[in-house]
Amino acid sequence: MSQCVTQTEEIAYQLLDIFTIFGAPSILHSDNGREFVNKIVTSVCEIWPQVKIVHGKARHSQSQGSVERANQDIESMIATWMQTNDNAKWSESLRFVQAMKNSAFHSGIKRTPYEAMFECTMKMGLATSSIPKNVITELIYEDDKDKNEKVNEKILLKRSTKIKRQRMTLQFLEKQAKKMKTISNKNFPAALIGQTVRVKIPDFDRCKIDSRTLLAVVVEVIDDEFYRLESKAGTLNQLFTRNQFTLCDEKCISISDVPNTTTSIRQAVAQLSLSGGQGFLRCDCQQKCTTKKCKCRQSNLLCNSRCHNSATC
Figure 1 (cartoon, helix red, strand yellow):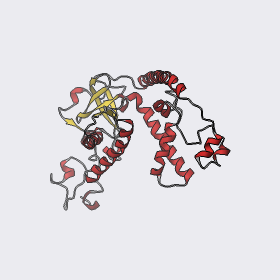
Figure 2 (figure 1 turned 60 degrees about the horizontal axis):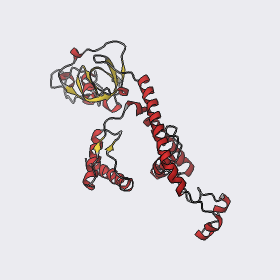
Figure 3 (figure 1 turned 90 degrees about the vertical axis):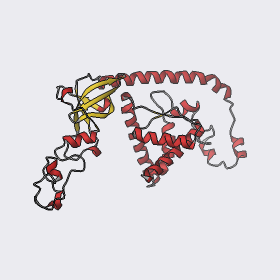
Figure 4 (figure 1 turned 180 degrees about the vertical axis):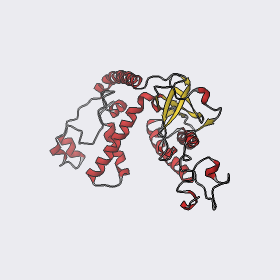
């Protein structure tokens, strides 16, 4: 628990370094779960009482694919940096990967993220100036630079083009959003109340021999975006977006089959599992497993190889 608190505080301090330079956002989103975001927001507000940040809702289904692709790109860039620089410390590459990502052309906004933020290209010192590269290698002092560089004033030009660029960026973002929404609606058609769906079970919520999906039925649609699902083990205690489940062609479960209880995905999987769910249920009986004192027998399960040191029942 103390390690989790320490990690939360470390992340909060890193975010504060960003917020104090660029300003704090109104909403904080994260892929690490609502509970994790709550701790981060609480820590930031405790350290900086003047700031007010609210918790972001679940990620929109139409943005799911782009976020996952971006994560894969970053992983590839880190691996390339480590190989190029012959450095096994991946954490040292993060700042350089961040700079490369922010200076790369974005097809959605038709410019780099850095240009969208600061209205200019990213500066790399004299390397991005008009001075020839063979001259740059010989420069050491500022006086040398003044002798070889003609200073071009671009302040008026930047002011005149700033509003135009901002409008163009907004138009490209709106166009990109419509395109992503169209693709999302095509790949993830809306689910109807009473329709059977399959929810993908995270690996850490099931054992290796359990099913990879959980059958559920749609019982409520909230804001045309979030779905409340029920399984044979009870009502799932979280809302789902359309990209988190697939539709079934046939009706495998009805609302009347659902008990009037609330459960989590892990609890539902464990209840419906033939092996006891994640981690396997096991007993430590010293004698024959013939009474209800045996955990396996009490749960109507057969003993497995982890029970009573693999001795026979």
